[in-house]
Length: 288
Image 1 (cartoon, rainbow, N blue to C red):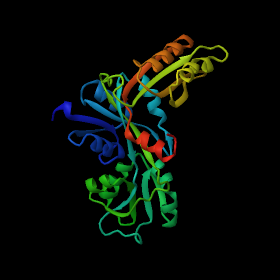
Image 2 (cartoon, rainbow, N blue to C red):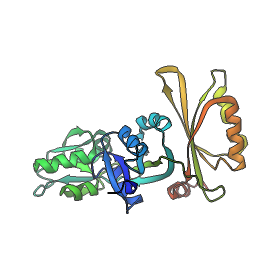
Image 3 (cartoon, rainbow, N blue to C red):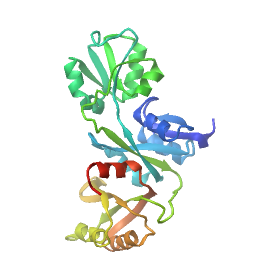
Image 4 (tube, rainbow, N blue to C red):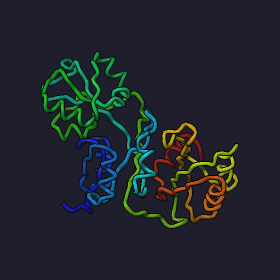
């Protein structure tokens, strides 16, 4: 198999990351990896050409591990994808809603389907990942056990869906970033673009306020600003930012120049086309 045709993801075959890979790149083969670090290593080392990394979920929030990996992983963001999470209650052949007593899945999937599992009176058992839980259910073949996972996982492991769409929140969506060894920047003025970068502020009063001022004065829309500790110190914070715009376009160029005056270690992680989901969500909420 050609390595140039592979896209790596974290989890077992049938995971939502696997589903996202197949939806965005239907002609590529997927490469399952045990950890997020392994995904970065596979792409960085040439075992795969691309990687698919989840960074936040509309219900569970951010995937904290990846905010630490992104600045240090040696890869570049070349795209984003929003994947609607549609949970299925999967069970072995012969099982019914009346026979199942136990449900296995990742802790986040279990928490996202609490209303359904409580209504069915199921005992919850946490698992490392959703697709892995489905694989274990298939191997055990016990009609008293089920898994919460994707429809794809059910197809891969020969399970049947006893109930679909069991997630509590209809908006349950995960945002993924597509990673590559080399940056692929869209041309300036070629359409809606997102720029992602990280920075640290100097240890002086109002440093963050001053660092962010250039984005307001230049009319740059900031869609994400998050902080997290670095080097295990409570006094040291790194900021992760998504903004709309291209660094070579005047508004963002001027904002970044001002940021570099007040901040340190500014590092652009990617410049990539904005996913249509962003505009759809804005229109749905009347932001335009």
